[in-house]
Image (tube, rainbow, N blue to C red; front, side):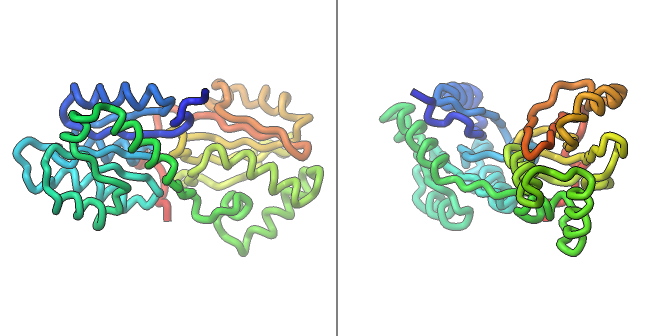
Length: 280
């Protein structure tokens, strides 16, 4: 039986290290990729680095902070990112007004009392995480949903020229529809994507090999990537000539063959989140 959270990314925000480790272990048993944080700064940093299907947030992150400032700030940060993450608010404080505030103002998926978790066991956390993951609708980070428009520079006015150049250079099988399918298959598993600040979107890097490349941030994978697209029959030669480049020395995290074209995504090391442009 396939794990119920297979392929899902879950963030656990809990200041108590023993409870945090217990939640992480429980959610990992369901097949999820789990990150964790123990305070507001680290929780916000995790959210800026990755996109999560579910965030389980302990509202009371600071002892004796009965206003729950830090926990609610985590939820506010997640809400403001607008990525579609389902939030489960968790608290040991049996205050119904806190539950109402979390559910209403921050669009939390549900509110869980730690008392209930103690009484009924970890099944409460498991069931809530599965329901929240099923309800999550992650939004693409690209300025537009169409990969051709996005790769052309997110400028519809330039798209026709850029697409025309690709068709003339590559002659993909299936023409325009083949090109569209190729780029969809290349980009979709990496979504959401951002163009890297100061970098061109997709530019010719090897005219003889007719290869295009561009640098992007894949927040879904938590990695900076170089996307490379070129004809299938020249891929080996172009990659050989690109051996001196840092990205060519790494194994691709994703590759696709479609319409007589071949595409790769290579990870870039040592890149900070601040190196990348706004999602808007």
